[in-house]
Length: 220
Image 1 (cartoon, one colour):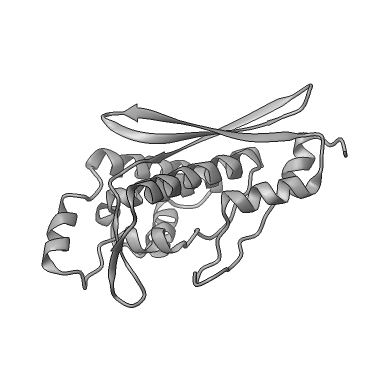
Image 2 (cartoon, helix red, strand yellow):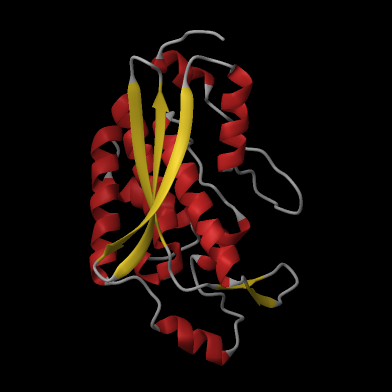
């Protein structure tokens, strides 16, 4: 077992995204990060603990990733909203919906992944274009009238919009870029014309992505 510092561990944990299965975009998962960590065989131990917490009447999965040795301990926390199960559109144009246990597992895995990425300062210039995220951020224009009607009440609130704007302003300040440049980057990546078009089911995806970039830049 090799003894290394936490900084060295972070450097070795820079895991690139990969394509797999029918997914057309490269991505990484919590399992991928754990597998890389196990292969390093260092003096560090890593665990992720989960809990359910409530904020403003909404339930979130809280993931706390902890890396520790006998002398040191580092932690990072991420949240993902346990929102109603979204209706997704497949490549064939069909509509589908996960079961509640499947969706809960997906939300937990998402929170765990971002906690681990924050812990190890794993950052990217691009966005995790996983199928669920790409199909649930904005209503598809070809959905039938009833689904569109249901989604109209599921856009992010003004308070959530303000949270995104504050994150973009902070990231712009850190990177030395204009707020407009940073905002346009995320609007383009998430195929939005305005953040008011963002569905509630996509709020955590966008905010976690921006926050990961903020945390990564602060540590560099």
